[in-house]
Image (cartoon, rainbow, N blue to C red; front, side, top):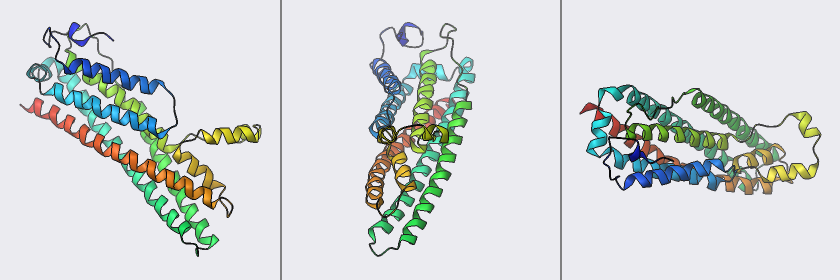
Length: 273
């Protein structure tokens, strides 16, 4: 990636130490996105990396030269788009948090039924149906949020038109944030089921291998759809793993949510001065 200070007159000839750090964090996030993985640790790494990237942004926004550049009239269009995009990302973050909370609540209720040894098969079956119904609602919300993100156009900036480095950097942050959130939403919703004709033509060994590659959400979905007295123990193990996964994601999202709000407030304060 080209160095930011080489293409901008807004930053000193000797780059601020946070600029190389910003570029390193951005490259790391892009590397995470380039690797396809269904592991929850992959999503957690992306959320943590995004938080570190936004921390760099916050430190860049306190620099007087960057504040002056963002307040210039010629950059108003770009800054307005960045602010609008940041609000949308805050909304998506809230949607993901609500989805995790809803899933975890259903998860805990179902685990409670399983742990009560005196629970009837009918009670267990009823709670499974409630869980799967809740998952359908969550999946629908995730797919809609993904479509909404895809509909948000992030216009590229011509770096030769005098646009300052900080504006370009903010746009790149917004772009990678969109990408990370799409990965997160897809992770929560799980993969779309293949067609029935495809399922009927694959071998059982392939199905087992395919299920082993599913993430915690999708494994629970698969376990409960075929749950009976023989599969209850397996379902409980999957639910416990999902609960730990959700706790980890909720913690990362909550921290990221606060960081997104802080960055947005910093931008608003710069424009209001």
